[in-house]
Amino acid sequence: MVSNCAAINISKEFGLDLHEGCNMHDGDKIGQSATGALTNSTGKVEVNPFPKAVELMKKASNTA
Image (cartoon, rainbow, N blue to C red; front, side):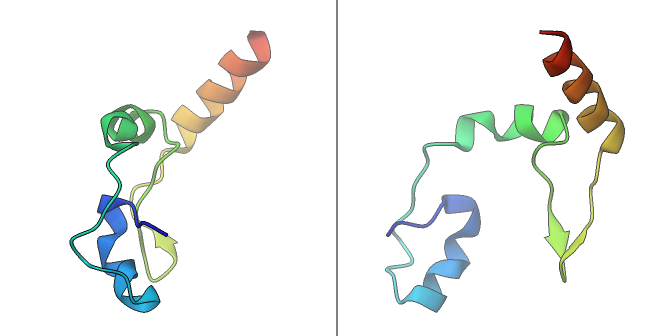
């Protein structure tokens, strides 16, 4: 198991090496955040929701 670099601290919970991480999806994080698909949370509460972008992406997907 390898943790995503953005969530490397979770590795502690699974006893993984903290220097080991996966960068596979790092290049897409700005785009995903811009479309509301990627959000951050604190205490299981979203701190940067973007519901209008999520709605727009659903409309675009349905149109396609």
